[in-house]
Length: 244
Length: 114
Image (cartoon, rainbow over all chains, first blue to last red):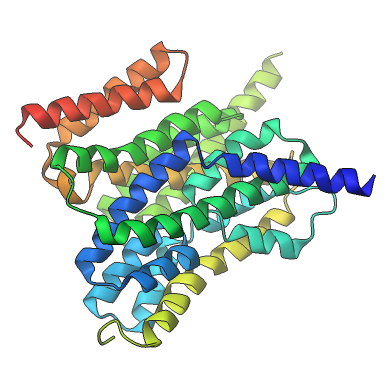
């Protein structure tokens, strides 16, 4: 019985690993090639770029970190800039944990695996876990998340030497793939109506708060847009239930 | 910071990069562990997380970096509109929407002489 369990965990870990050959993983790898070009321009040595890829993982946070390093910012200033850009990790992880944890999943394991959460892994996991048995979801996510990070560390190490300048149309389309993929996949994979409403409100709130409070735009857009979406959906639900 | 030599850049990346992002992930685990799967609180967290990602997406479209920085806004918004139309026309298949949006963008960039 115990052995069967281990075999099954390995199976789902491998299924997660196979996610490396998927549209989101390929789009992310293309984005990492773009990031690699940025670090070459910034003059950051390849060892540091590989270390950064594994240690920070989230791409927007790394772009800000590279910007701070280029500007010669001090440690505290860089820390504040990066940490402000990463507050969104908290609700993302908090929304994912109830979806993937099993009955006896230890907290230390979730703390370790949370490192592998960034937008792509989050969108992919939220979409796919539905089709994974509850007690195997952690193995599945571990397989996908760890493989994705290691593959991109390797990719960065190799691509660093070869990133030539792309033709402008290719570079532009590569950049545009990321937002377009996030939109299509979040909308398609949403299992709750509130996600659709939050997506639309977040899209509108992002630019609005960038205009009002550029320092805290993403955070405020998430809190205000998300809360409005939640409250609106709740009212709608109550009305439907009341109308019956 | 002076240059990118020695051990200091690694300390810099570990503190200003690693720690600065992982504290939020750890707080997320702590918060998420307290959420029941069918609770109203989780519904709210889902909505906030989705709106945050959507705000990041909106910024990537409206304020891109690199080549797209000099591309006209109408072309980027038009590509999203074409992609969205194709996505909903094709029973919400992500690949169709993505392909339509990127093709529109590529055609537009080409015609504008990029």
